[in-house]
Every structure is written in structure tokens, then in C-alpha cells.
Length: 157
Image (tube, one colour):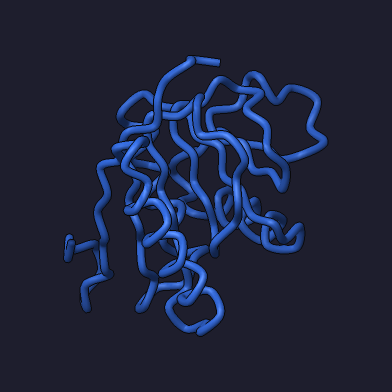
């Protein structure tokens, strides 16, 4: 646990690629920065799907990760979970499709990825954006990123 204060929340609005296509690319960037990440979804089936996507992303590279129930969670660069935990001392929290998390104290950055094709998820993301923006005591730095037509991300807010 780092005891850091979350300062940066980045909303990633998935519109062109699926989550299992976009997440590995972002995790490459996180790994290149020398950071560890917790990837949280409230859906176990989605965790299993993302686990597979991280394994199969690029046959010539490796994104070191595992998920709930593994033998060595502390040794993982990326840890997929459905619960509020940080066994690998991550400073990056990835929330998938409006997953909730109780305590941000351990994290410097939150990557909030949500599927733009789901009205319920988009509505939940809007509510979370408004709530975090209104939390003046937290003083979050917030940004909104949208997928470009040819891939990649463009900051919109």
C-alpha cells in the first residue's frame, strides 16, 4: 500500500473498440511507465474474458497478470478482481463499466473505462463523473477521453 492520494481520474469512453481490445493497449502504457494496476469489474465473467484478452493480446509480448484466486497476487503487475483489494501495491486503479470501489487512498490514478454501447453503463459513468467533480474536498484532476475513429484516444474534457 502506497498511502497515495488519488489525484487523477481519466474516463475512457469506449465507442469503436471493445473493452478486450482497448484494455491491453492501455495496460502496455501503464507497464511501460513502470506502474502496477488493479483492474476491477463487478462481473466475474468479464474478469475471465479480460484475463484471456490480456494473455492473447500480442503473441510476441507479455502482460504479466493474474486474477482473483491466484497463488501469487503480490507478484502481479496487473491484477484482475471483483473485490476491493490491492494485493500488489498498485498505484493505478482501472474501473470497468462503472464498477464501484470503496477506497481510493492507495491510488494515484484511476482509469475509468466504460462501454458507450450500454445506456445503463453510460448513465452510471455520467453520475460518477458528476459526483467526483462535485467532491471539492477531494480535488480530483479529471479528464474525459474518447476513442478516435482510427484508434487511439482524444482528450475531450
